[in-house]
Length: 175
Image 1 (cartoon, one colour):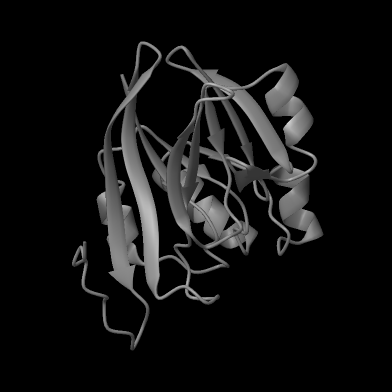
Image 2 (cartoon, rainbow, N blue to C red):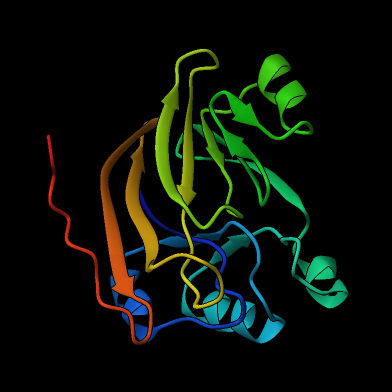
């Protein structure tokens, strides 16, 4: 079993509270817009890091972290890229991959919107951890933690942190 910490869109800044949330993790995945090699090095020194570059990442970051990664962990085929979309709204470059060789887990970032959705059409779990950094329109910074064991994902948890100076929204459900 592997415990994975998933984040995206740090834009060069990471709150120590996310590192505390990631303490039990065996590996971190970063879905792009890391923001600096310094931050990537900090994450990699903390836990083994699998990451992709995003649209704001510079040339130096792109030399170390490619635009996409495909790997297998605990029997799960994982594909990660920064700009990917979600079921019914995938990026044009992602559609052929999903049609011809869909992964079990598809990870992306970019939107700054936390989404975890199962795409029945491709048999793929789509995960976007939202944005962990301060730059962008999001009101809440988010990251995910979950377990992978024998080809199954379980124990999904969300870490939510307010943006500096922004009050956390209430999680009331209105029916």
